[in-house]
Every structure is written in C-alpha cells, then in structure tokens.
Amino acid sequence: MKSKSGNKSEICIIPKPVSLVRGEGSFLFDSDTVLVANECTSAAAAALADTFRPAAGFILKVTASLPKGRDSVFFALDPSLKELGDEGYRLVVANDRVTLAAPTQAGLFYAVQTLRQMLPPEIFSQKLQSGVEWGVPCAEITDYPRFAWRGLMLDTGHDFQRLSYIFRFIDLMAMHKFNVLHWHICDLGTFPLEIHGYPELQNPAHLGKREKGNPPRPVKHGFYTQDEARAVVAYAAERHITVLPEIDMPGHSQPVLLAYPEFDCPVPMYEWHDFERWEYCIGGEKAIAFIEEVLTQVMAIFPSELIHIGGDECPSTHWETCPVCQEAIKAQGLKDVEELRRSFLLRIERFLAGRGRRMIGWDELFENGVKTSTAIMAWRPKVSLTAPAAKAGHDVVVASASHLYFDYSETTTPVEKVYSFEPVPAELTAEQADKILGAQAQLWSDNHPTEEQIDRLVYPRACAAAEVVWSGRGNCDWADFAGRLRAHAPRLSSLDIHIPLPE
View 1 (cartoon, rainbow, N blue to C red):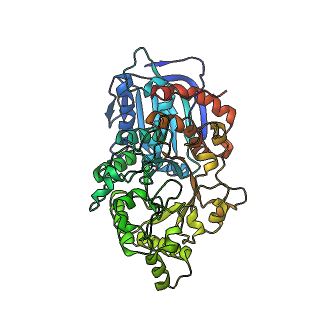
View 2: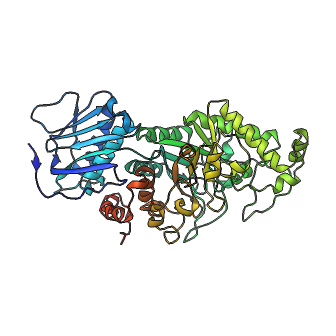
C-alpha cells in the first residue's frame, strides 16, 4: 500500500468548498494507480488522467473493474446526492482509495478540479517534473455552487485573440469552476467570425484604426472560421462551460459598416469619440436582414439558450437625421428614434424566440422596455439596475464595472475589492433574489493588451470572483482567502502566471 502519515497540512482550494474535513495521512499517485470508471464516468476519469501526463510523465490506467491490492480512484454517478444540485460533488480521500461521487457529470468534473488543487502545484506544469511525490492529503469534501451562472467574458472584438489563447482561457476557467464563457465576438476593432456570404468582414482594411497600449499597438488581424468557433464550443462543453456568443447591435459596429456601408444610415459620417461609424441603420431592411442572417449563422454554431446582442452605448444621432429611419418611424406609427430603437430590439427578441432562443444584453435593454423573457446583464453601478430588473421579473446576470471589470488596473479594482462583491442587492425578497442568475467578470481588450497582460489582468482577481459566485456569502473570509491565494500562487506560476502575493 502506497501511503504515508504525517502532520495535517492545510488544504487550500479556490474556490473554497462548502465543507472540508481534513483526515490523517495521504494518498499517493504513481504509475500503478488505477482509475475505476464506467462508460458514464469515463470523461471525468480521462480529465484526471490528462492532468498527470505532462508533469508526472505517466499515464494512469482507466478500468471498469475495481482491482485487488491496487490503490485506486473510484468515479461514481450517485443519484442519492441530488440534494447537492446539478454541479455538486463529494470527494473522499483515504490512504488507499479516492472516491469522487456526484449526481451529474458536471459534479464529477468539479470534483476532479478540486482533486487537482490538492496535488503539489507542479502538477499544473506542462513540462516533466522530477523529484515530486504526487500526494493528496486525506480529507472529506462536500461541495456545490451558490450560483448557476459563474462567468468570465473575453473580448475579441476590440482586439483579436488567437484561437490557442481562447483554449487556454477556457482551461483556466475550468480550473476555477467557472461555467460560462461570454465570448464578446465583435466590436469596434474587428468582426473576426466567418459569416458566409460576407467575406469583407475579414478584410484587414476594415479593422478599427485605433492604436492602444504601451507601446501603441494596432488591432491585430485574424479571424475564426465557423469550424474553429465550433471547436471552441466543443472544447468548452467538455469542461462543462457554456459559450455565450455576443454580436453587438445596434451600435459598436464600425468594422461591419466599414466593410458594408449600405448598412449605415445614408447621411454624412460623423465622429463619435474617435470612431467614424457606430450604429446600424435600424430603419432599413438591408441592415436588419444582415443582422438576422448573422444571428442565424451564429445560432447554428452556438447551442446556448441565450444569445447576447449587446444593446449598449448607442447614440441616436444618425437616426434623427436619417431619412430611412424617419420614414420607418412614420410607417410604424412611432413617436421618435427611441421608439424605433425599442421596435428594433423587440423584433430581434421575436426573431430569437421564434428559433427557441432567448435574448440577453447589457442593462440599457431594461431601459429600452424589452420583454421580461430577455435577460439583463447589469454593468453600470451608477445606474444600479440589478434590483429594478429583478423586481420587474427579468433574469439578471451581475457584471458590475465597479468590481468586475478586469481591464481596469489593480489599483482601481484590487483583488480585495473584487472579493468583497455581493451580487444580490439586500433590498430583494427571496423570490426576487432567485432572478439573480449569478455574476461574471469582464476582460475588455480596448487597450490591446498582450496575452501575458490579459493573464495578469484576469488573475488573481478571477480567483476572487470564482469564490464570490461559488462559495457563497457565508463561506467567504478575506484573511482566509488571502492565505489560500498564497498557496494557489505556485499553481498559477506553473501555468506561467505570476501574481503578487496578498499581504
């Protein structure tokens, strides 16, 4: 039997489990360790086996039968644990056996993520590590998340991100038990997703012209084929992450309007901030037909129930002087451009609903009078629409810029501030609070950060956000988290993310 006894070392997991009881001794992994899984649990077993391959240099055998005299890791789908919810799990580590049990595949996957963090931090390295004893402390853990929506947003619309980096971003999300990747596909810099019939969207001549960063960098050219986007969806799904696509409308659309100016209002161009084009001509059928075609192709790639349509920061200057928009206002019996905006949004809402999907967008949509079937992503702390939207009956995802915009500097939004965030307003009743689906943090690429800079902007603040949405209000303590973050830092270092240690 490969086991050892010793002092009870602290177990530092992020996000913190609901219940953790430390035992005596430890379980040691080596090349003889066997993973016991059936057809229903083999995916979780494969995820654990893959953990050991690069750093430990051995491949763990997966078998359907429990071997005699061999230390083993047993995977079980257990319906009796349904009280833990769709993503809960139990993990029991003894000297000669590890048992991972959950009511669902997702729960087993999260049990694997916890077990990975119980191993020495070198396990996260992609290079062979020598002289490491791959021990896991004995413990009993029961765990489940507070919120069903635990998200991070990655922006490829202000600046392009390589496909390999998106996969890395997903791996880091899975490690911290996030389950929604909000893919902000297009914006003022680029429209990088292949849309059949519209090849000019990928022409580098239509990229945004801003140079940002230090030294100043232009928007990177690149695009994703639809098959590559499907590969992202599949890769995320294997890690129990839903990809939420965002196609910005009616504003934030400069690359589209540069490529296809017929979708813009037929009035002289103007500059808003430092952008020469901004919003679609929402009174014209050409633009709306294009938008509906884009959404049709997007829905064929992304199976998520919700489709994000942006809806934020859109001036009405063009519409006020556009003869097409003004004619549409008269034809529809509308009062002004704001009613035209609402008519457009309701049309998109119906278009998605008719195809079995639901609309979600930034909190301006709540002000625009969309139906309660539309989910609201509340981002503006000064407007503070989380509680009003929930009271009105909307599902709400909290994405507050005050605490969850990770493109802001760590001086503006330090990790301790992120950790202090409470997504549910105190004024809500229990029934209203159920409309808060969860929360997510945003990484905007307006400033054209490098991949290394994105890593450091997101971590360690995403560690704090992960605990806010998983561990729950009563299970969060800053001093305790800071200690666990210090233990977590070597894991991130093994992944080439080097974070400052909290005091």
